[in-house]
Image 1 (cartoon, helix red, strand yellow):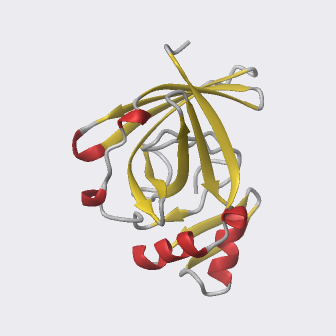
Image 2 (image 1 turned 180 degrees about the horizontal axis):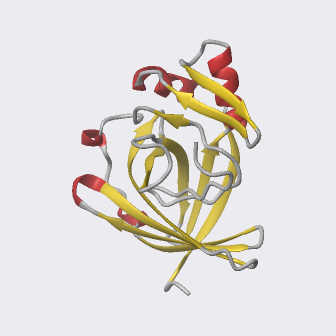
Length: 189
C-alpha cells in the first residue's frame, strides 16, 4: 500500500490523491502494447486542496513515460515522487499503467484513465477503492482486501484479461471516484 497520502501520476501524468490506490501484480496489458502519447509530455499543474502539484512528464523508449510529481504544501512538507508507466487502450478509453519508482510496493501497478481537452487540459480519473474492493469481495476480481487504520489495502491478483473486462464493463460513475484536472504550464516553480 502506498502511504496514507498517495501522490500519483503516471504515464500520462497523473496524480496526487488522499487514500490508498488499488494495486495490481500485473499491468492491464504488456509494455509491448504501449501506445505513443506525445501530448502528455511537458509540465502540468493542479491545485489540490492546499497543495500546488506539478508533474513533469518525459517520454522514453518503447512509449514508456517518466513522471516527476512535485507537490508544494502550505505546511512546508513538500514532496517529490517519481513514477514510470505507459498508456494502453481498453474499450475506447486510455489507461495509464503506473508504478512508483523507489517506493510503494515493489513492482505493483496502479491505474488511471484520462482525457485531454485541447493541448492544455488533462483530466485524470482514479479507480474507486470501494468499487474494486466490492468486486473482489463479490468474486468479480481475484485479489485481497485488508482493512487497516488508513482504509483498505487492496491488491488485485487477477489476470490482465479479467481486470480489463472489469474495467470496461463497470459503470464509469461507479468505477471512478477521484478525479484531478491539470493544466499545462511553461515551467516548474
